[in-house]
Length: 142
Image (cartoon, rainbow, N blue to C red; front, side, top):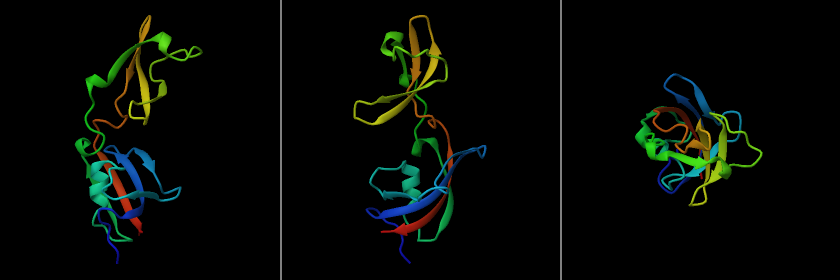
C-alpha cells in the first residue's frame, strides 16, 4: 500500500478542532484537500503528520501552536487612520477586513479597537496561539 513521502501529491480528508472540541474546519462535506507533502503549503505539524501515512489510514494528531500558526504577536497589532478604511465602512470591534500582504497573500485583519480617528487592527492569524487537533485520513497518493 502506498505511503506518503516528501514530494508526493496527496489527498486527505480532515477535521480540525480546538482543544475544547470546537470544529474550525473540515473537508468531510467537500472534496478532499490536495497538497504536496513537504512543499510548505500546509502548517508544519499537519505536513509532518501526513508524511509516512498509508492510503486508507486515519490518525488523530495534536499540533502545538509553534507547529501550526505560531504564537500571537503584539507586533501584529497595527494602528491605522480611519481614513485608510473604505469610505462607506463604519468600523466596529470584531469586524473582519481583507487585505493583501506585501508578498501578495490574502490576509484577514480583525478590528480590535475603534478610537476617535484611528482603528487598531489585529493581523495575527485567528488560530495563532492555539493548539490544534486534526483527524486526518489519507485518501490518495498520486
